[in-house]
Image 1 (tube, rainbow, N blue to C red):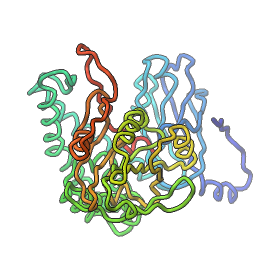
Image 2: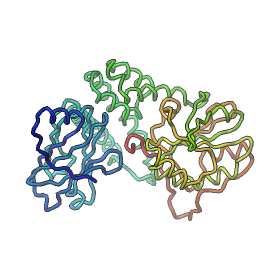
Image 3: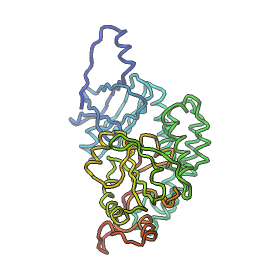
Length: 401
């Protein structure tokens, strides 16, 4: 972690040139910190930098390396509340941005000024929060609360109602926002994140068409386009288009080389705990069905190649390992969370898809393989009748990268 202090630059020309490649956050903090003065900022799930609140102010200076959602949290929330809700500032250009925070209300209540993109992103979050509030209010009218444990007999019905309400309330809000802000990077960022999970292909295509030509050139807009293609390509019954991905040795692995076999394609990442918890059971699956007619292919969505290689070495899985260096996860399979697995038949047709990992019973994938090969795979773990089953849900990609 780095600590930044103010520097005196005599030349305004040097200062201007320096600022062009940096992001500077200047924070103003009110309220009694009770001595908990650290402010942390990160991207993904790795803390990058720390600043100290002094006389009600702090400053953090970072290199600008491209559009980024810079997340903040503070020591005060952790010490006083035992948890924190991060505050995100969306940046698409270098510059100086100003954060105003009442420490007693939590860092997530921060307000940002100094740039159109972060200010608009804050407005989008406010609109999205209001929309989610409407969803929860409707759920509470029906079920008495907006969330139920999986053991509750109404849990499945509540989940279905939530999906329907989100499509009815949140999706129109997002599409209206994009229509009004088609020239803003915020629109592409919003759609490629949580929004795309609740949109139909038709809604996504209509939303993407609203993006201005400049926005369509951004990486996030390209991911939206790839995702639309992936949704169409990865439907059950569709035939997988050939693709390549890089091996740990740096060679391109060609999916076409597996034609004629049943193949499990497993999307995972080194930072995904459910993915790695699933591997012992997957090794049992591989041991049971490995033959000239069956193979497994892991495709990591890691952005950090070194982290991927380290995890590959640690897990030492005996099947084919690759890293997605050609956007296969997006444009080939529309992956939004890991682990996600597909079962492909010998002609390349998609038979099944599973998202997440259930550790205590056989899933549709294992049952289908048992039907095909006439062999039985061991259950992942033994379980007493009184114990509840453990379902490991997929980790959203956007949140973790």
